[in-house]
Structure formats: structure tokens, C-alpha cells
Image 1 (tube, rainbow, N blue to C red):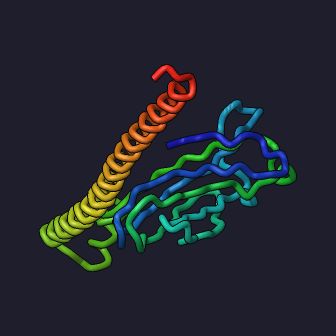
Image 2 (tube, helix red, strand yellow):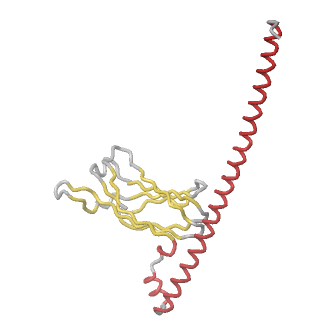
Image 3 (cartoon, one colour):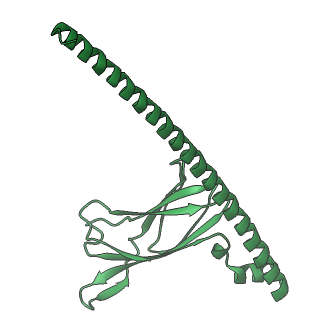
Length: 200
């Protein structure tokens, strides 16, 4: 994905993304910051002083990672709890460093997609068959984590639905009681009114 940051005005703009991630899952983000060059009317690589600050929060709103990186690179973290993780990026540039418009390219890979298998093959000296088996095992592990996470979400949704259904039931019972009490009170009030007027 790609987005543009407006010209800095002393405060850096933050862009946040929500990723649903199972527990114990590796996440890799590759990014590149480019600056708009008025002379060539295109985005070019930025000067070395400009970089990105990356902050990741878990579902409990605890900071998993908070670090400043160069203008181009990658960040990696492992989720320790399942749920929505908030990934926020902002440029460390100010109006003093750069006053133009910045563009950020970001690619987030989760689970087995985050692993560079060519690097694993070279490091562990694996044959093509061994590498493919390793990939399949990682995929099975990731599928298991995804299923566990979906089961957890379904359980939470079921609990919420049951709680809502129970509240609706109690609310309808309360409404019925209120209507009955109101009707009884109106009948008593009308009866005493008619008795006072000697119509009954």
C-alpha cells in the first residue's frame, strides 16, 4: 500500500493500520519513504536525515515495538497474543528537515509469508525437497494458528450474542411488567376518579 504524508508543519502525521494476527506469529513490514522533488516533478529517494518511526500495539494496547528506522528498510515483530494489532508509522522529519510532501510504500507480510525461504535454504543448506517440506510445515502451523484464532473469535462472538439475547429477553420482560403496572395504575386511577365524581 502507498500513501502520502502532507508537508510537515512542525508536527508529524501518524498513519495507523489494524492487522488481525494470531498469537506467536511473525510479522514483517517492508517500507520505503520518498520525497517529492519539484525540479523533476516526481518522487525521489529522501535525504539520510529522514526516517520512519514504527510503533506496534497489541490488543491489550501494550507497546510491542517502538523504534525509529532509516528512510527505507524493514521491521519485524512477533505477536504474543491473538487479536487486532495496531501498526503506526510516522516520519521523523519536521519542517526544518524537509518541507515537501512525502510518500510511503508499505508491504506487511504475516505468518509464513514473512519468511524469506531463499535465505533459510542458504543458511540451513536445504535441498529443494527439504525446503518445500519446511514451507509446508510452516503453512500447516500457520493454518492451525489461524483456526485457533478464528475459534477464539467465534467463542467471543457467541458469548456476546448470548449476552445480547439475554438482555433483550430481560428488557422485554421488564417492558411487559411496566405496561401491566401502568395499566393497573390507570385502572385504579380511573376507578377512583369515577367514584369521586359519583359516576359509578
